[in-house]
Image (cartoon, rainbow, N blue to C red; front, side, top):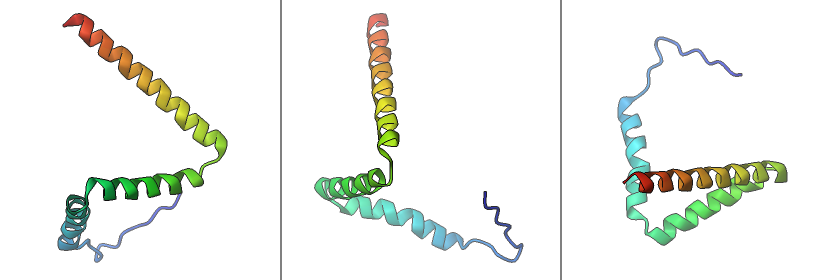
Length: 81
């Protein structure tokens, strides 16, 4: 674990932080749905290429379990209504 100590004379530039936060949101607004989807697909492919087959399988299994749990929860809510 890397621990970095910040000197008292080093402070973050709040203006730069604000611009950085707005940059991604502004860019997302300016992109079409197809462009955002293409960028997301490219990112997902890059992340998946770094995973082993076992890690991808584990992630997929967890996604299936979460989907099943969500469907069961929704059915429970419909029964109460």
